[in-house]
Image 1: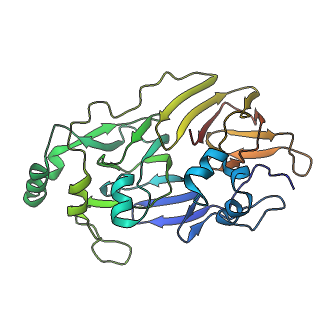
Image 2: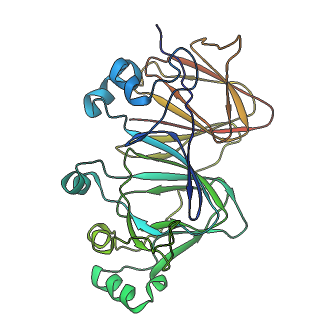
Image 3: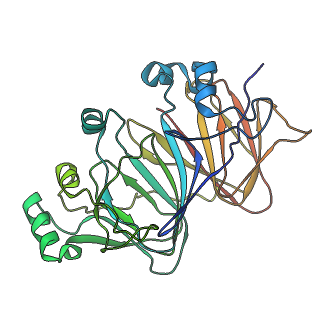
Length: 313
């Protein structure tokens, strides 16, 4: 039977700092389960194993095999997250037998003057950072950046980063949960115990350079497609529209994931319908388009719509 656009049950993860929801995941025990159509109740790992390149694309399957390569989340930060860094693929494979963690954020909601930490405010070194950690003056080195709704942030492995309270983001990342927690304000976890730090591991992988351009510089369009992030692990584009638009993926050779950042839209892919109508994609939800998908029509359900489109280049 033909593959079709897949919605998944959301995996909800309460955190000490707020809430995280995993929209599309094949990581560890947190594997997304299909919620619609005849494949409902099958998890994403099972779907990749059965449908292989038809689901993910020929070149994607050649590179990753049965490992689904992306993890999609939303983050609702009500308080500060820990300051952290992720290893690259080479370090992650060597030390953990896993993928590293390149990622990106797209800000969907932001309180006035809310901030993120994105790298250092000057060129530093391992010795300098370690000394400030020991002296209790580490926060004097961080690059605090005021962000706003619609900002996009590329977070390559090695970049120190965190989100302060009052910010909601969409996160696109490699399928990995490797996080080295460098600094956590001496905070206790949900169990009342002080949370574990990974100082030496973090110092091994940090980018110590001054992060001079932390926010992606892109020109927002009232209607159209804009590239936000392009790296070896994923492409992420912003689709903005107030009337029906079409997308063609015949030559892409990759699955596509839509994540709704604003509004809601009807999605009609290769004329697939459920209960006589297209699928509805609401804010904070994701839909996975199999690599066999060719033509998609997106129709706003009311006001202007913003959707993040991501796939493997």
